[in-house]
Image 1 (spheres, helix red, strand yellow):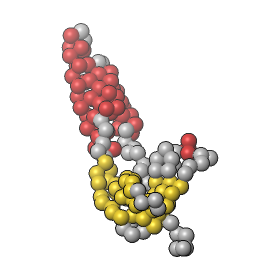
Image 2 (spheres, helix red, strand yellow; image 1 turned 60 degrees about the vertical axis):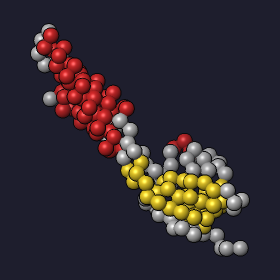
Image 3 (cartoon, helix red, strand yellow; image 1 turned 90 degrees about the vertical axis):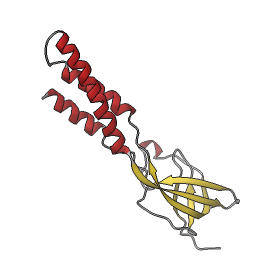
Image 4 (tube, helix red, strand yellow; image 1 turned 135 degrees about the horizontal axis):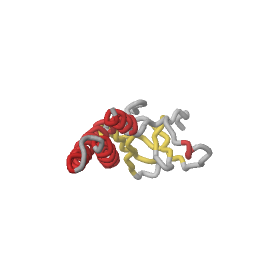
Length: 151
């Protein structure tokens, strides 16, 4: 019973992948003024964001060791704890890695000054090659459509 509760806790703790969409912001961004540039998208391609497994491995190992420590007595309890920790670390690491992987888009943008930058963001509001964009610089750089009339 303890193992299943701890496993579910770890699963839900790491089940949320980072939101990389252009319309999702952290609370710390509210009220923050950032620089804005203009550019044109010259290339876009789909990419895969690799998941991370460090925190899941650590938490799963601790949870597995604690849950398995209730099995047996003496040396048997120690062996169960070690086995539970190893199994929990493996399951936690694999779970977090799989749940945090996601598809994204890599944009290459030619800025108004002729320089180029790349920006990676989510799949939600796809932008097209040749589209004019605003480049929102900040803690996370984002691209949004430039809907101002052409000059």
